Length: 428
Image (tube, rainbow, N blue to C red; front, side, top):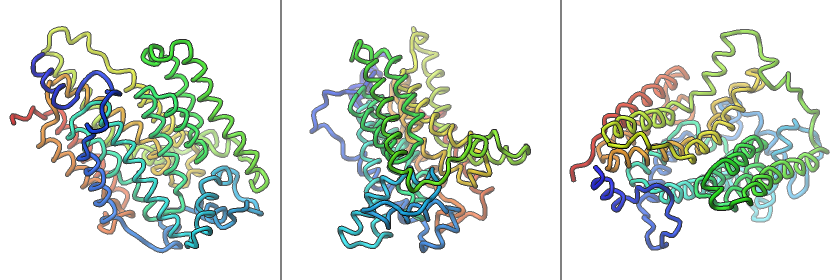
């Protein structure tokens, strides 16, 4: 087994950590090609409608505020809108200003911004998957977990005015890359970008700061300077949010109370609360399945290896998991009436860090087995995720209702568990 593991490490780069010294010529562009292929499938199967119809289909009255702020650029809005919308003015201001500068319509400008941000997220994720040292097959599955999740990208191709949410996802991707690769600039830049886009990034910044202090590899890299870095991450998020509140105050409506926006003021109905949590978790079955299956299969693989009790889950795994959970949890604590059926979209904002955790789990599974994820398992997983990407609203080939979408997500998750747990090494 030791010889096999050494062979796989040499062939696939499945080692104990990121190879920061890798020469640029060693980049494998095939994983980038996989990402672009997945995006092509996504674009070809997505549904597209007019502006007024997307607001109705997505229950997205938020976009009315976003478009108003973009129309006002390069100035600021002169009427009041909900405070939580006003605090996201930065991305709308940039898009509105560029649209006027380039003489573009606002909707085309939104679509260009959505495309550019989506491609950038995928390129950053590809870079991270290559650097953590996993096989190309496992990396492809992880990319598909993000791109083909019906709640991560599809709604923005249908209603592009919510592009600020995607900028938050980009910031989270850069930040979690920085946490995994121990890059101070990455963590600071990602947290700052995420906060500029949406206030959702602030609680995640607390997790990032805690990880920098606790993670032994950060301690080895920075020594006593890790605490100032953690404080700088917190200061960047809180300070940026404070500036945003000051600038947005003239066109912000009154602040809602915690009782109104959180579960504290939720209807006292078990049915309503259960549906709320179901909507929060519907984007999560596939990535949760990979997380659970890789952990279980790794335990089985290491059970036959002498000294396997010493194997430990990397701290970066727990860091990524906690970072994503800090975003997902914010959807869960909202008042269902306040969330107004937007829970899946809000919960999906935390998918990328969870995908990174799943990638680290698959990497450790490949190390434990001494082999890469088999091609047959990769192909089956990709087919399942492609099937699971279809939705009752977002795709032109639509399911009948949300119940069928939920059943499909659970079915795909169960299939992924079987594929990962039962996968065997390639004999080639």
